[in-house]
Image (cartoon, rainbow, N blue to C red):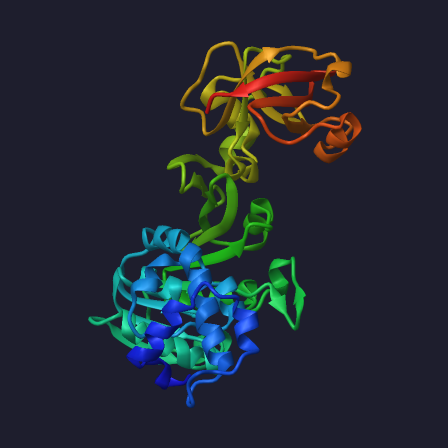
Length: 388
């Protein structure tokens, strides 16, 4: 890390060119003798990514942006703020510190913070940055692996946070036991030094598989933003709990749905029907949770088909957690679809969305939504307008 980059003239220069193409700038000669074009390019790119992902950093003086890969792997500001609500106490351990965004937001709720990171370059950058961000905390920085730290640690922590990597030696891993560090093999040792563990996982992981493979799960938080699932947060505690709480939440729409895992298995089967006046598509965090029977029961809705995760009613349920549409025309004549401008949604239908648009030469856009769905045992084409 080149500390010369913190000089006022260089910082002002970086801000003045932060909208430039960082790759192109990397190929140019640096206007400063003691700062390379590569270093300037890294800071430009860092500010560009932070603008949308971690905007609070733009106002932090003397913040040093790490590489593009580190920024891409870091949590966004809004998901980090949510994690802050999940822990409180005296001592906090981040076992996979990375860029330190989660360290910073979660750490606000603790008096002492231990940051562990095995990548030496990233460790030095984040050590600098966290000392810039924190002015009133007891900070301890350890440049080692999570496994080594836990094996040699004698302290107790009120919360341990771990964000295992899915990318190992250039390839992506999709099994819990393949992650690094291996949270399954490390779990028991972590619970010896903390009563609560917070694990961040990719949205690709299945919650049933997490509960099956990881003992001591008490809560699973499914975090979405603008209907896109971003993260799974798994909370482990020093207790046996076969019925963890599931929280599906969309941070942008400020909506959430909570239930206990076994509730979905015990819930009565939904009523199935053809499409009624209103159509409901659950938020993707709900679909990720798999609480299909509970959605029907909680909102008093009929389901169109066991494999069509769309719901319907004759009365408007305006507090539904997801998108709501009103049907304006049933059983559309396929000949009328040729060349129209519309939005297409295909659910449990023989053709997917792209195939439908190609077949009927439908152009994306407009206010109309055409649903191609299976309801009960019939295929339907519906014209709808979105009302929420």
